[in-house]
Length: 318
Ligand SMILES: [Zn+2]
Image 1 (cartoon, rainbow, N blue to C red):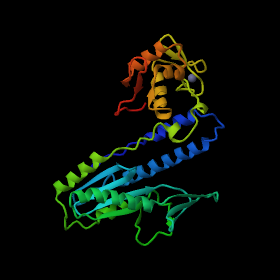
Image 2: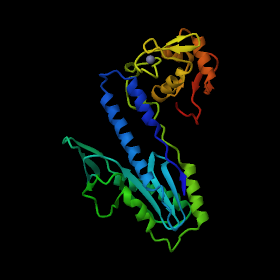
Image 3: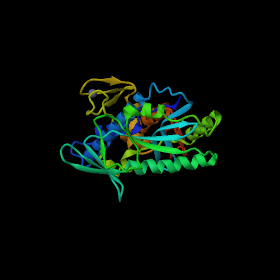
């Protein structure tokens, strides 16, 4: 049973919004494009595994958590809990030739163009995740072994120099590998398994990648502010009586500022004042800024003069 389903990572929306506001020749443009590309490839690989496990119906009780974020930035792509083991699945969806290197452990990717890139080793990532999960399991005194497996999203992908203690599966074989696991000697009861699943979900806290501009050490003055038209993107919309108007494509919108303000929180900073809002949206005065901010479902802090608005914890970005 899947007890938590995967959601598309928010950072993808953030990278797209950042690129839309970044001048063509910005020195960090390529870096953001790379980040967007790998975030898309990552979720693509994870969704491919989800598809392969969609009809997973083994003869034993089990729980599946898609995308588990444990404290200290420990992210697990898919976690399977059974009465006999916990299986951590780390998905890779990367093109070119992949090679695992040890001492130090890194993953080397050679692209068809000949370009060589190196990444954190997924083996180190899985082993670190294993220690974190072990700590939680130990709190319950469960003698549950924790296994790890690196999953390659597509059959065309392969990885060289895999150390003998590391298991690598293709996404297509995960279903039958899990299905064939021994389940004749349960080490915990179904209730205990459920309790463990609930506990893992309760400590799961998605990593907040925002605001991207300070986090990625970009100078905020180099990024375009203002109301970008949601239709033609590159023109600044004007505030007319109670609505926004794009002088270029003639789009008229009552609520285009909602997306622009979401972008403020994703990109610039976690708070906004009426002055900042006025300047950012290109409004004539603080009164219209204050009206717009008050209508939004935001938290407020500070007195009248220094009021700051910030997002509620459960905010859904546009
Ligand atoms: Zn437009």
